[in-house]
Image 1 (cartoon, rainbow, N blue to C red):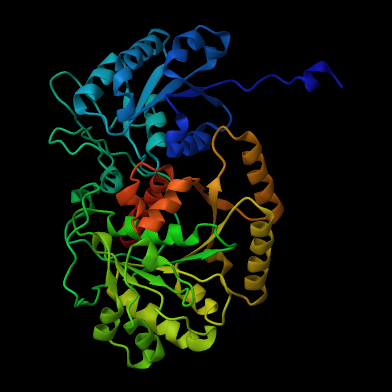
Image 2: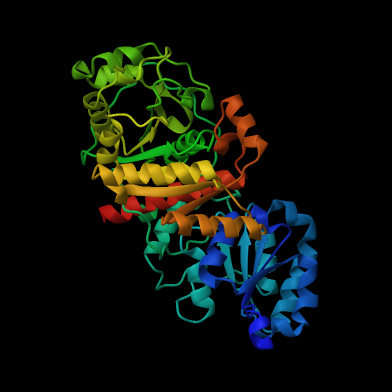
Length: 480
């Protein structure tokens, strides 16, 4: 074996992120890995100048500066780093969250060529890299007299990305940038048609929860007859499936400010469901009445069992009393899902861990079935058993989307290696990675608040928010 084989040449570094702590920008890490593979690294603000003077920087194409409001006291250092990059002929992408427009203008004048608001819209980084390479029209231009101008040849899909972007500053002069969504997302059922074109929608903003609506909930039929059904099932105890279901429903309910989608969360863990605890809701006695006679169920009885929550989210909680597993039949589940999807744009189902005779009913009615797991042996074994059971019964496994919760961080090379080996050994694609939110996630659940309300900057919240935005964007694209 030659020495060249023993010590292969290192991969050239084509790009670097520059930040105070890259772990705060999990979505940027995912997109950089997708676009650059192993040909990128990470720097701190004070490491830019020394690195650019090294031979390893000769192949560098661009730097992606990631900043938020906690970096405002380092703007001079950041501006100096951008100037240094431009002096060395390295292009600069600015990824910013909660940064006032005046500071953004200053950094862009120092040499920033692309501005991307964080959380990143789907395909935003890909589009920015393409524009730096000269393969796409620039969508953002900035000078000293005009804050933001868009190209006259702006891609119409940019408006869709703008509809799902969360604008951090709420000042009248806040800078926003629309990025085209270029990659595909899972196809789901069509949403309610908006009264105005999608391009007219404004980005969702975190606002205080609205006042509770009247106790009597009125439901009206959807104009197109069927909403999207998304089920969430945990493959092991405590893997975070209910956390994902509750917060995905909350993010979808606030996906857009104009014509917000109507969202219903169904807690189908009829024995030990916890969605009521996650959202600080009372469990209604009318839920058992509804489940005991679904043949007589109508709009009024269904609405009477629902409970309003944040962002006009409607929730069917688990019964207040423990009921036997055979209390609910497949026909009952089918009737509830059918009525819910005829009245709501999105129906999110929090499944119980036990596989019952109506699990098949949910699988056949849903558009996507998220199976949540962790990097451990019990999740791996249950994943194989669950998938094999579906295949043996001829059930639609193509609807399955495997979700890895508490995924390893960018710097955890050992954990990322375990994740890759786990995916390969199971023969499944783990399509969604949710970061570990830490003890704060449990504390927020105990307080009965969603992540959007209590921890809006949590990496876990941002990942679920991005998933909701992608799903909502895909629904509009499917309708078009």
